[in-house]
Image (cartoon, rainbow, N blue to C red; front, side, top):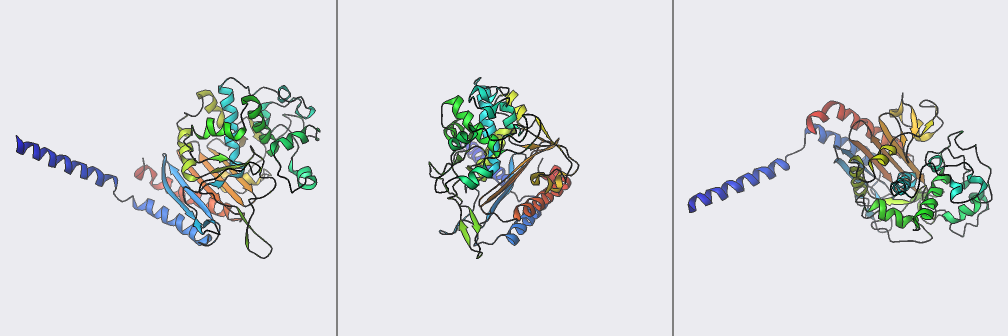
Length: 391
């Protein structure tokens, strides 16, 4: 009996060892070639001693490539990694939209509510929540001319300051619903609306109701007027007239939330991507709205008049709409972000489980090159080998 027990234990140990060996087997040659190609692409374009980028590819909710290049902080020489928190610029809009949809789920808001229900300003007449979300509100751009030309740049601009400006009834671009114009103003009004309806500061509401629920432990909206500590923060850089990299994180409009201002990492974003793909962040009805176009962007690639569409060849032959913080086609959702010292891009396939992320902490023109070439490498790989090596 004793010998039998010993034999069973030995057999169990051998089985455990074999199981672990299977898990650590080398990945398919084709996948290694893809990883090597992407790595070479980024190494050839980003110096180790400069601000850089982080890239990740997720397929079937598994990160098949992820790596940082360059530095998050030129002073401390700390590198960019998968846990580095980088400023998202307009990629942040999807999280503002999710805050609104959560309020709809709680029964505190309707997409058909008019904004005059909350602020009785002439500029908001006939504008609905949905108009703000899909860029058909016609609200004037807050940057030009007032806050670029007339604002005292020694003071940080916050959402409340722009609300006061909107109370002066700046001339709209068009009547609500009569056109489509990408609007940062609309998304900061949405952030103000979250505060109005919930009774919480927008950043707190987003943290509690979106980021924490999505497993984004270190993700935050950041207001320069009320600074918080950003773990493993990537500082934003631009070259000066002499070609030197200079921090630009103190820009006077970095107190504005909603149209931008999220800091997140690759790891946090991929945790959120999984939650989104499994439809567990919001109600089933609200999830259906996220990638459903509620407005149409006119024109055909490459002549829509919008760089966020026209610069990317993979948009050829598609029709474009806007969902909840996403540009959407029949098979793809995407959004990019551009702000002082940051360039970001998210591409998410709707007809297959593929997500590509590119976050940069500088304003170089590399984003389009790197994103397009990465997309092509991944797309070619999936066409030929994914069914064999991943599914």
